[in-house]
Image 1 (tube, helix red, strand yellow):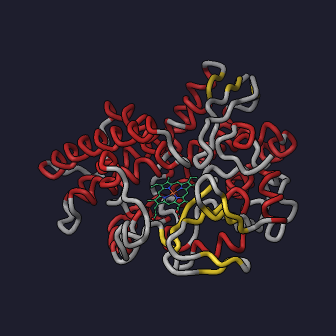
Image 2: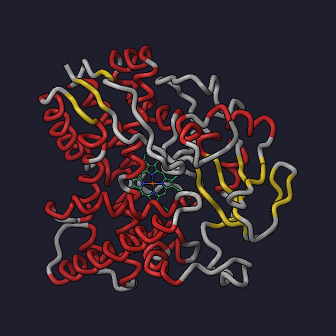
Length: 396
Ligand code: HEM
């Protein structure tokens, strides 16, 4: 098999192909997307921190000046939302936007949310166990992070069902070479989500609550687009990957039953287990960067103006960095995985994600001691955001 992100067999198991890329072609050109694929941990890690690369080039040049086609007009509402969030801008705008929200996500702030996270997950798991199990993704993995981030921002209960479909539709644009239909669906979702958040922000400006949208709506230096872009980013990034770490993680444990037993018998391993599950089956397989100045990677010259694709899933299995990289080891102590990224865009929500994951695996391990797989799961078609469609399990 070759690197083929549109092939379901590759998506289900990309690791043998990554091995080959790391050994034989660690920096290789991928014709179908016109990107350079970067497979080794050392290169991925260094490039994430290299300021000669960017998530965007629009702070330096127009599309035309950078030698790229401008996006079609119909995509304008999508990019207006996405490019107003910190993830798709570079300094100085990135620094300003990140500073405005980072206070809400410090380890100390999110640690104070742990009791609430625990209460939510225990409620979900108790209902799940009482029914004897079901789809772990739909019934535990999704509602936990969606509820947590929605409560944090102050999205009313009655509207929460809207978040997941909007997010999934928007994320469709992040896959490689999205279809016309996926592009239109993403644009529609971005417009609807944006209108919804503008309405909510107006209401909170008039009658502030204790939530993050109220706090952001009071900040005068934040434009309306930036407020919307920030909220969309937090609501989407705040749950997409966490859902997939939970699903992929349980699937990894079911395939490694001795590690599942080891973890159940020693819950003090939960923090290292969560890091290992994120390494072993990385939920976000690839991140892209624009090359802003000519660079050289592993002896290969890469010119300004092209895009590189950092293969996180490959970096996380690199034998140069990880001892026995293809083995799941829930006690792995030395684990510099790259799943939260690195450099200025390092995941703002990492402390929150870690709490959610430790609490969720902990609750299922203790409250559903007989949890067992009912049937082998199927993967969603997406490669970049890689996760299971559903995970059917029984509990007792
Ligand atoms: C296990 C779950 C998660 C994973 C694996 C993950 C992964 C990542 C990665 C890899 C990046 C950097 C992307 C890049 O460099 O191009 C990132 C950025 C970000 N993440 Fe997460 N994330 C997770 C959970 C969360 C949560 C719960 C939040 C909640 C707020 C969040 C908010 C963000 C934000 C705001 C950024 C942009 C940071 C910036 O541009 O400065 N993430 N995440």
